[in-house]
Image (cartoon, rainbow, N blue to C red; front, side, top):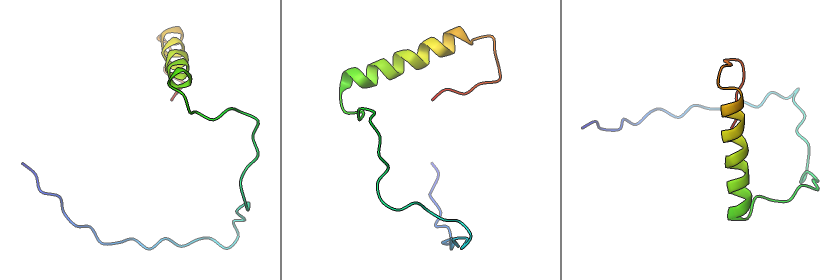
Length: 61
């Protein structure tokens, strides 16, 4: 059995040259809120993995 170790906190510094957009992003895409929607996404990823099963140069998630 392993015991979790406490790690020191790492301070994150925000680069002042990076400009973050404000507010919410507008999208006309439906939200992922139903079990059917989730099943459709899983099926799509499984189909892509099968279709590209011989390839090594893609990532689908």
